[in-house]
Length: 247
Image (cartoon, rainbow, N blue to C red; front, side):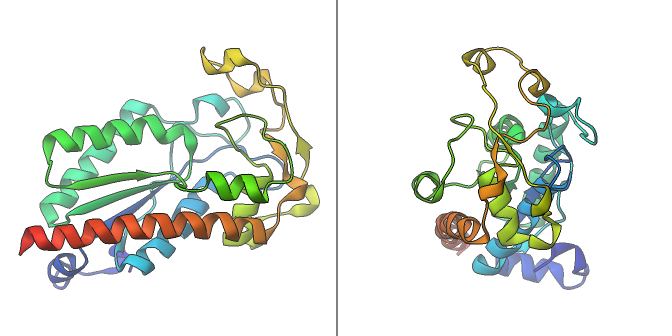
């Protein structure tokens, strides 16, 4: 259920019933010639909607800006600082707790947000330890991804506008994908990129890190449904614990 469409007269009672708030967190950045700038927002929001439905939780309005330092020089990319994200997410979490929520899920669609989400969760742990906070970025998909992937990964941790992320979009938002423009670009990312600030334009001109031409809806469904199952189990367990704590 979408939180923003509720009214102030009914929402207090419904918060007590649902207990869980899911915040999709994305970004606006280059995703090659075949995916939109808001790919991370779309993925986070549509995954969030599916998770909210399976856990009977509230879906909050999407936070559409992220930390995209690595891609900030590419056309269309918009970036905010980690510090801004940390403070905003911390404030949202505190406000949710004050409103009566017991579980706060930050559902991330952009790898670059990871540091800020983790730090915000730690701050909330110190300020409002009764609030259970999660930061999800496609948990539980390592094995299924390796099984369905046909192309090699450009990097052990990164996936971007490639076979995998394009498959995600084909499953969740096929109408926004132009497969006629999909390309294969598997750049050589040196070891130095993992231990010093490295703008992505130093190793790619396309912002594509893999073979997007191999993407399919079926691959996206297999991976994302696996992750949704993992997240659903975690959130429902936390929801039951929150209910016990309130009784």
